[in-house]
Image 1: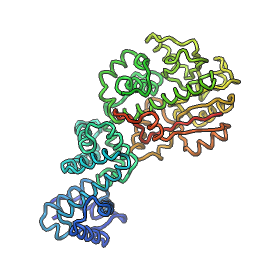
Image 2: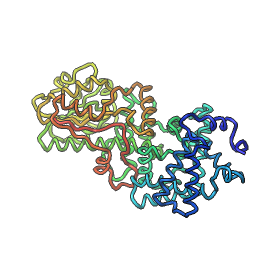
Image 3: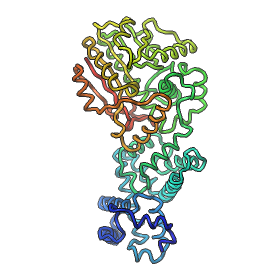
Length: 502
């Protein structure tokens, strides 16, 4: 009977799943089937807590039995429903299967609800309970796995056709056109591995799907100058000005900084900047830039008159605030500064009188020496901003730069961004970042340093900083991204922000 529905190879797999698998004759399995039979006979509501707990036990057992193979699980279900003797043999009737399916939907939705408002949770439940949505996804996942196992290139037309179908199905199943709800659902999926039980995804398939999604969604032009990451960030700042309301970072110079070619390319491809990968990156970019602006403003109120932007790239801070008191020092690689100055000239953006360019290679020339040549006063406090840079430097270079800042005048501070070890990220974010950092490395900008938050805090104390403050993503969301309708939201970002004070 099984051979009519399941291929020979799958039968071999099913009968040789290994020591951690559950056999169909296992007493625990048969007892579970009997328990489900009993609660269905008693008409236990599928939405009840007891039903949800039973559904989780069922799914964990089924996942072990099939090794989370959605193709196999889907075909076994079809066999169960399509062969008349099957219910008598396996013990699971169509009514029991329908009940456990509904109970598991309520169980998954209870996990999603931790990240949603009551109204959002109800909308997700409503969409999840639609039968066509429940049946379409396993078939699509099975189709995707077939291509992965066959070695089909992710850019091939059949795989891209699946990607094209995936997004509408995802929205239909969870959120519709509600960008805020979609961001919340995606955060839940990032943080809750149990939500992937029973749907057939393992890490290999997730990586394959993400890589397929990346095709055609590269945010950096091929001719990105000496620092591709700087242009990527600049493009996201510019996209923010065009797409998102209200503005988190009001940057009227963002588009001009791009130049005519990049501006046109951005305007012609705005839709791809509404996609989740772009929204996630843009959320991080605008929040960190806005936080840096706020920290600088607070420093000015305390009387600090030196602002140092480390690894300035195409940062626009000095040009947006040309009348700010004191001096601004932009520190970056010589080639990057030449590239930036050429863009400034092309765009007709004046260099403020207060600005000093400081050409420094953090891994070769001392920061103190470069700043001294530009007129930096070591006896006066300074505010440092160091965003999107440390991960591209060796750990020793990061430590030495922080050591220099810790030795500056009392009242100095540095707001900096660092990358956490990718292994500490939730699976979806880790897979995405592994692929993205591999792409950065191919362009000559490999990520080199990573820090555990607790170890970094201890290092800052040893270097001489009197205090350090960090922000959880939820705090920054509340501060800068609350009550939005455009989907900007920090989920589980691979980097953290720290303000260390001398």
